Image (cartoon, rainbow, N blue to C red):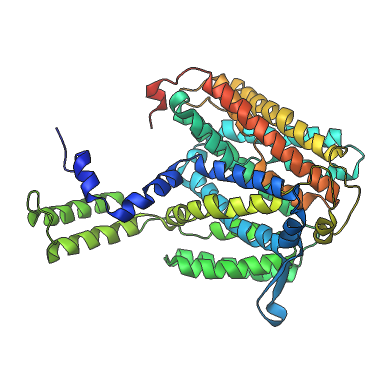
Length: 470
């Protein structure tokens, strides 16, 4: 029996406007989970082709030699274009990461200690073992400072690949991988803040702390207007940048101040919406497509306002940021950072930004092999091994409906470092050739890890529908 929203296809087609038909394919693409990952791959490949073509000089000129100044007087900032991307745009990405961490801790998988134990253990293994593998390969070398590069997991890319498997794996595996990647991101943030910060300006850091305290007070007072938090967030970003701590950390700190409570409880919301729908239906005419009455318009606006109040600012901001991060910020980051010269060619511009120069041989650098082995051996072994031990010790439990093959496949997907690994590489290496080598290792290893993880999960048989249902 057809319900009120079960509109026949012919009627739906008649109701669609020309704009709906034109924008439909793009809207469907943006809802496809793997679309952001596909765009990342395209931008990364485009950067590689550009940097190794006859137009390589234009790539260097655009991202490394072009400077942009914002502000005025002593408040002004002048940076190379790539630094604006890595310091400012990526701060927005880390804001989204911070929001995800906060949500998972408050209401998600990380709220339950028993459920959180397995992904936390897996994430710890996925940080410790790859870092150790890298350090062993680069022992005694100047490039040993890049041990943090293979620790990172690209959550968006990993989940995008997992989406290609569809219903062949339980939903619980996606939750496990998401939780693992979020804990991994938190670990990466601590590594950046502690190990890749050269000097700290305590005066600026103190001022940033004062602004953050003001934001927390506003949160406690019930201020929910997002523009207030975002404007103060820009101030925090500037102060953290000037303090010497990497500016992207500001994104996570600001996320912690965003309100996470609703203004109305669920029972009141349900009751109110029910009464407004009853008011709307009182003036409805069967099959009519006429103008709504004043009472109906009032009911619709009231429901919209109630929906705004019942949704938390954390969730609302997260939803608003996801398309911008997935389809703009991360692709631009990939385009600016994945342009590695395979011949180990001229790196003068990179040296100018990084502050040093050395041999330009990409393939001879141990940084490349440390990253590759760290991601392709250290990451799967660390994630799977620590998860296995945690389960056998009774610390954690396997995701519902999942088996060890699923965990092993997820461990390989966690070896997709990409965005986070490229970001840490920019902080870790002063030597331009080691930086190029590490980037090349990240790109190559991430592709291999994604393919292996996809094959492991796709050939494991279809998941039980009961366990895979949301």
